[in-house]
Length: 151
Image 1 (tube, rainbow, N blue to C red):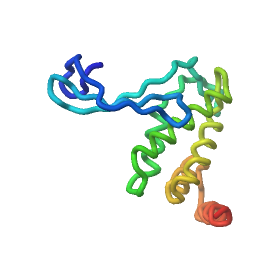
Image 2: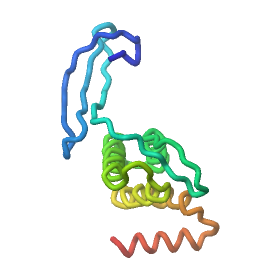
Image 3: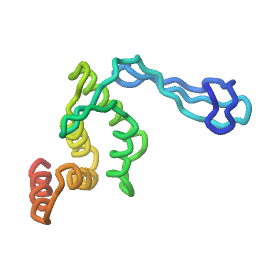
Image 4: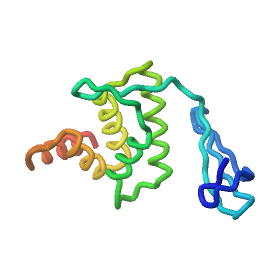
């Protein structure tokens, strides 16, 4: 494994942990060249998912885009990076189990909405405002009322 800091190839594994469902192994590593510590994830390779966009286009599923969307929604909120990583893993696992090759973009958005509603209400409303393309304040109010009724 290449060190992300110095590009040295030798490292040692300090800690290994399996995810709750056993699908992913998280490894803490230390570079033997510079001493930098970093995390890697090991998982079973699945068939590549294609995202079917609203206009019918297809593109490769990119977990980094999913993580970036969650990070943006949770920006300046008391949500740890570990919780976001776990949420990404759960969403990817759910999508991989439910869809063989192609997943509608709407299914990804709905999965994110479901997880964010449990993770952080403010992050949920932020994401919903972009995902559902709110046009006025009434749509915000309606979403907040739905959220408060669930609690």
